[in-house]
Length: 319
Image (cartoon, rainbow, N blue to C red; front, top):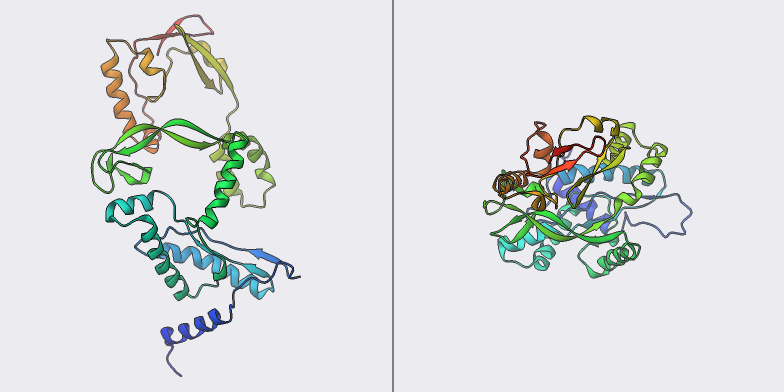
């Protein structure tokens, strides 16, 4: 028996598949049942594909071949998620423009994916930084903006003062920039947001009707995290502070009021005697990630120097 030579045999069939467009989706008016399959688009970094990519691609590849064997008209595109912080950071690190680096990396990714022999319709290749593609994402954004579902507001972001760029949570390592090692800070910046909460109730109410594993549905419910309760209004001089609670009946026992370190009223509620301690506490808290702040359940805080009126008892309680 001739020894299996993967380089020789794989190349032979991959060339034949490419020449005959073996995995190209048929026309939409085809009578066969249709199936659309796609994996998450990889970000085309200079490192190339890794085993995590291959794992995900292989799962979709198995499904693609299965449905093709069942005579489905299968559409499986391939693409590259080319926008975002990685392109910006890579440009800072290497001095190569994002456009040039992305084109080079895509060429390598495509070569690697084809060498793996994936059943992809290469006529449906997508590059998210191509104007022919992102003109539609811009169109979608405009529709959301017109409906009031896209809006701007200020929010804190990790900021590297040396690289002069924002950082994602995973790019902050022990309070330092993953690339240059300098200490990072939280900086308030104007950003765009989508009003996904406008659809939270609708999404939550429809989850049970989905044909999904119960574990996944539970994860989705927990992610949305709906709580039912009431907003209670506390007064502190000329300021009003709204507090949400699922147990308004416990209000009679409230002995203090807590504000998050980034609450906009803190700077107005501190006194000359408490300002230094409050500033130190807020600075230290802001250096922690959201995960770190949630993991440590020990309650800490410092007195602002101001008081609020408990609406249930009429008594002053410290903030």
